[in-house]
Length: 127
Image 1 (cartoon, helix red, strand yellow):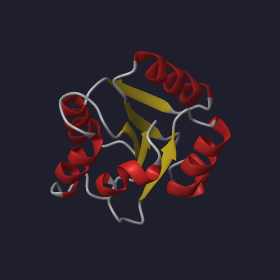
Image 2 (spheres, one colour):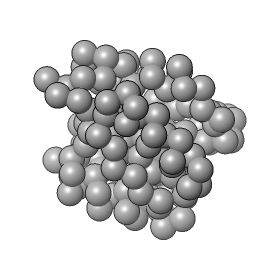
Image 3 (cartoon, rainbow, N blue to C red):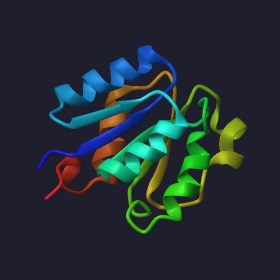
């Protein structure tokens, strides 16, 4: 089965770019524009992967991470955080968790694909 990926970013251009790229790769994409919608859609759809901006209106992606960790249904979902800020500026917001990764914007789509392959079984395909 192709992976279902939830993407969250308040920048509509980045959201469109990621959605189109992932759909082209064959994934099913759910796109949201803020942290509150991210938490709701994650609980509703139980995606295989979440890609989220760290700083967004409604709730930071890093805050939503805590909500997801407190829910038995969503705590195992891998999360790829992204930000235009250097990692040293957002390090305090990033969880120390083996199922999370960080990529800096602007995104290198080859790195994005490699990171998805790392986080999901069978390189992005879910059995």
